[in-house]
Amino acid sequence: MNPDMDFDDDEAPMLVTAGQSEDVDGLSNDVDDKSLTRVPITIITGYLGAGKTTLMNYILNERHGKKIAVILNEFGDSADIEKSLTVSQEGQQVEEWLELANGCLCCSVKDTGVSAIESLMEKRGAFDYILLETTGLADPGNLAPLFWVDDGLGSTIYLDGIVTLVDAKNIIRCLSEPTPSETQTDSTEHAHGPHLSTAHLQISHADVIVINKADLVSETELKQVKARISSINALAKIHVTEHSKVPALEGVLLDLHAYDKVDADSIDFASKGHSHLDPAISTTTLTLPPLSSAQLNKLDTFLRNILWTRFFISHPEAEGVSVESAGSRPEIHRTKGRLVMQEGGVKLLQGVREVFEFIDASDVGASNNDTGKIVFIGRNLVPAALQKSLEEAVLA
Ligand SMILES: Nc1nc2c(ncn2[C@@H]2O[C@H](COP(=O)(O)OP(=O)(O)OP(=O)(O)O)[C@@H](O)[C@H]2O)c(=O)[nH]1
Ligand SMILES: [Zn+2]
Image 1: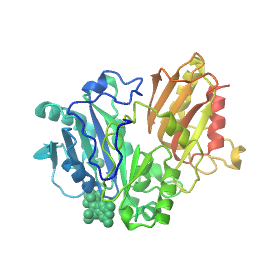
Image 2: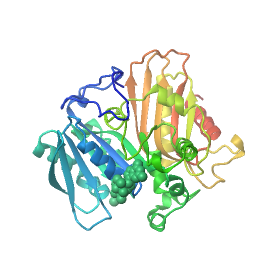
Image 3: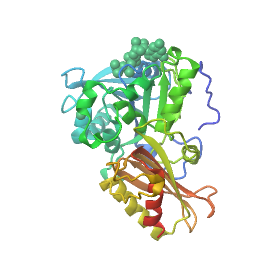
Image 4: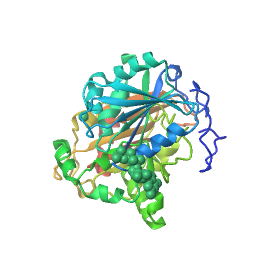
């Protein structure tokens, strides 16, 4: 990000002039004028007690120069249908109430959420930024595609990133032991295979993971937590904090562009191969040689099949494991990729659950010898079988 940025823990976050939204790193090759006028939204998730409110208070009390609208989604906590909205400008907080159609933002959002935020923005004048805090039981996979809106909707906001806070002391237990309420809300979709907790869903969809409450664990425990988390999601950037004091806002929580850029470094990191420490969710990287445009179309079809219908040709000989006989089809939560094109250039691939898109990128040093990579985060991923199906579908 900004090379001038100071990551010293004790330093206040970088001062950003209100309204400034241009990229400072010069890396965004494809961010067009939309990002200058559309307001970014960051979704903050995390298990109960992980430190979300602490983080919000930290952000709202910092002098960051941004006009941030914070939407607290306290569903489940009360029958109150009004949501507290705090507007922070230069440390001054103004309380307002944002009325939503029902008591649950994740449901309201399906009908009116985006337009509620839009009309809010008209009423208040433009915000620089929206932070949406969801409570412990939210599945970001339901929320993300609703904010990740296409140009067609003419929306004035865009999803910048998903930040998940985890409690260093409790996260391993959360990943292993379902609470009774989770078991009830678990949809049948997740009924097969090892238990999928809310913590899994929050980690698998995260672009940034903040491991909070580091003061409560030893170095060894912290290492175990980090290893477990990167085995689930090798794409996310990890920060370790006490009292949610992130090293900076810019580039750490805000202005991540997690859905319109694909950072080559993060793809490379994810493809390094990580242990399958977690039985429920893992990160897998597939590779492709430079593609013709006909092959890119075939890849599009392959992705539709696997993401939309979860149709999958199993290969029992691959790793000796049959996906079918395991009784489970791949369930992909997050997709990112960089595809090298034969005629030069790179296509970026972005996906959340069944929503995906290719983005043009006039890359930056990609040669025809480069390997294209697709990273999947999800469950029931059998790397060799997926790779074989991919090659049959795209290269044959
Ligand atoms: N020891 C320690 N306590 C922390 C840290 N961060 C937050 N806490 C405490 O943990 C408790 C929960 O923090 P919150 O910020 O309310 O957590 P939350 O995620 O908003 O919780 P819910 O809204 O209930 O989901 C509070 O008592 C905080 O003071 C930390 O880094 N270390
Ligand atoms: Zn809901």
